[in-house]
Image (tube, rainbow, N blue to C red):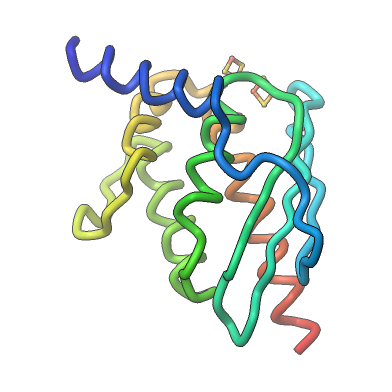
Length: 144
Ligand code: FES
Ligand code: FES
C-alpha cells in the first residue's frame, strides 16, 4: 500500500512537472504517435549522434500515465546508445505487462509504472512514448 502511494506520487510529480517538455531545436528523429484507443498523441524529438541519444523532448496531450511515462523516458534516454534504448524499451514493456523482467537494469522512476500491469487499459497509455521512441530509432537506423 505504501509503495502504491509512493508510486502514485512519483507519477503525479512527472505529470505536473514534466521533464524535457517541448521540441528540440535540432533533432535527428521526429515521431508522432497516437494511442488509437483514446486518440491521445505524443510528439517526440530526439537528437541522436553516432548512435547515442544526446537529447530528447516530448510534447503531447494525454492522461497522467502517458505524460508521466514520456517524461520519465526522456530523462532516461539521454546518454544511452540506440541499442541500450531499445533494450530498455523491451524491459519496460515486460514490466508494464506484468511479465518477468531483467531486474539488473536500473529503471529509475519508471518502476513507479509497474502497477499499470493491473490495469490493462492503461498499458497502452504507459507504453505510448516508448513505442514512439522505438519507431523513431527504427526509422533512423534504416536511413543509415
Ligand atoms: Fe486513464 Fe490512460 S490512464 S485511460
Ligand atoms: Fe490517452 Fe492515456 S488515455 S494516452
